[in-house]
Image (cartoon, rainbow, N blue to C red; front, side, top):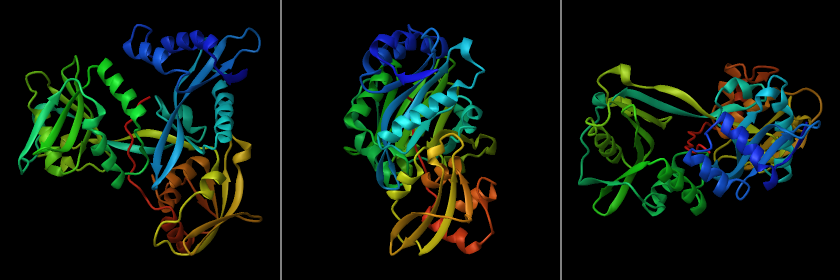
Length: 396
């Protein structure tokens, strides 16, 4: 199989495979994606048969930047991973991912994002869940939240522009890690698809000051589907949820993928409606040294030293035995020899770097193996890579 960047002349093959696996050609998203976005704003990597040149598999690399522990990190978002049905069962995805990772390393990227249809396909390639959500699925009539205080009012929008939402979304950076940076282009892309999919909006204000917004759809099966809810205060959130609850004439159910730390359920009288945790987005590091070289030591982290064996079964050049030294607020990285204090597979390293789990949690889960269980090393690494609350709500 020959892996290469897809050209405009080869795009019809990509469109045909997308039509087979995902949205159909007549779907409005399909039309927008291939007319306005593909190849203009992203890269498509295709695996082509060396025998007859047909497209065997593909993945799309959509550019994003996220705020990773306060720093801007460029990350490709992998979407549209698909294999021709006649070529399935031959593990062709492995070679395609290797090519994609090596391409991205040359572009000074260290991580990629991916939302899996089935996590098991990607876990064997060391993708690991770094984002999760608190999902509410419940009868709309059972949605019970306090009456908001203050002079809040809600306005409904069928058409809208990003100016209504930009500042509210940007405020999330104060409390959440891994947050995508929505530039003017990213907002335009998001809201264009919203219009195609008839996503509506509600904005809650105190006087003339916006305090929160909600993107939502009312689906054919009478579900009030909250696509995104951002609120600066609990009262603003309650106002938006009470607005949602006022749709009993057109909706019977509520579906909402809230932030992982959402506590709306604390007010529910019926614990059966308290929701569940849903693993949401995976990530994968393919250049651990680059990531560590630009890592900033958190304030208050004690000085310490540890040798780690970073393992990558997919990408040979991403295996490293390194010693990390935190000294006077700086992290020093050097090649090591001898025994490692801990063995860290790349999936666990990604989760550690993203702050999805602490070092101690990953040890307890069996994802990281320590040569000797040393409480002092655990404490040092928990302080060096503290837990974060991550949030992302991008789908393509």
